[in-house]
Amino acid sequence: MRVLVTGVKGQLGHDVVNEMEKRGLTPIGVDHAKMDITDKEACDRVITEANVEAVIHCAAYTAVDAAEDNVDVCMKVNAGGTRNIAGVCKKLGIKMMYISTDYVFDGQGTEPWQPDCKDYKPLNVYGQTKLEGELAVSQTLEKYFIVRIAWVFGLNGKNFIKTMLRIGKERGAASVVDDQIGSPTYTYDLTRLLVDMIQTDKYGRYHATNEGLCSWYEFACEIFKQAAEIDPAYGKVSVSPVSSDQYPAKAKRPSNSRMSKEKLTENGFERLPSWQDALERYLPQIQ
Image (tube, rainbow, N blue to C red; front, side):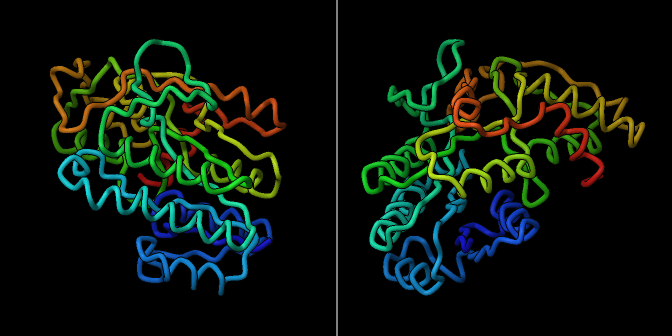
């Protein structure tokens, strides 16, 4: 199977290509230089010439706080770029997978968000633009997967784990919010599910994160606990819980990022391992 993968230099796109190659599939990875997704003609030309059966669209503007000051750019990439790709997929009659986020919801309450919930109320610009991307896909195509993820970490690029380890080493202490609850997502585990999924016709919206819930504070505590087994210096890092009010960010974050993954089970897909297990496998690769 030939699949075009956007955002090949990002955390997720990089791992998707590796997973496909491992399975003997044919990924065609593109970055901004090879295909500017905001350029409709470029999308048409590159995807058509690639002669693929599907597109896995991982590329996105993901700087959540910066998006508040760069609304036009964020909208152009996340909404416009996705619309361009969906248009080509429709023309060619091929399937599309769009990677989205729990930020399309308002993050209130304590109930897990259902994949087919339409009660969208993004709290920030990033969430709004990702929602516009979702709508562009669902309104344009019939053969589509929308996969929402959260709290992503992988080998490529920046992420919360790398930031914590750096701060721990530099300062010996970290303050982390304890009133936002969700599930981390390891790109290595996620990609196995995405590659399974793209080879089926079980279309629709899904949620995919590692199993288990935690606050960012609990996540940080576990990071230092496991990191200390590799480098004892991390065992001396003190982690303090703070409320979101004490840790103001430009973009408002959802407090409830719990996501229901029952639909994966119902459709015969294997759920991701626990986030603690994922962290245990990830840390030795970056330390």
